[in-house]
Image (cartoon, rainbow, N blue to C red; front, side):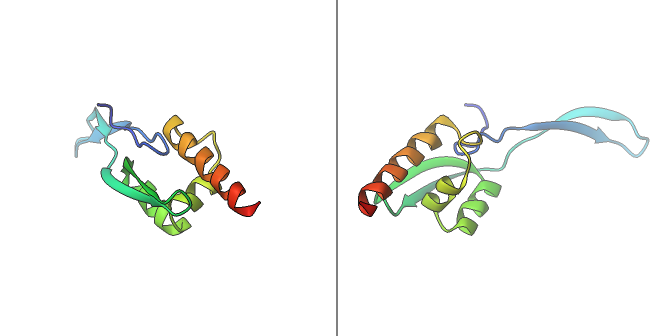
Amino acid sequence: MSRRCDLLDTGPMSGNNVSHAMNKTRRRFEVNLCNVSLWSDSLEQSFKVRIAAKTLRTVDFKGGLDAFLIGTKNAKLTDKAKKIKKAVVKKKEELAA
């Protein structure tokens, strides 16, 4: 299983280990992934996702999964997140009409 965030597709980065003698060797900076269940208020359903800790903090800051998805551009979201976002937007339009 690849180490990628289910919502924003955040993946590992690469860089260098630098010793005191300034020798450089390549390394990977892995993403801090968390297995969580996020509740959607409009769909009244929870979704099990594997997301980065940074993304989880952003979801909390935005006010939940629905607000996060609506406020995020589709270009940044994964296919799974776009599918959930489409369902959320559809449900909100039904409630508004």
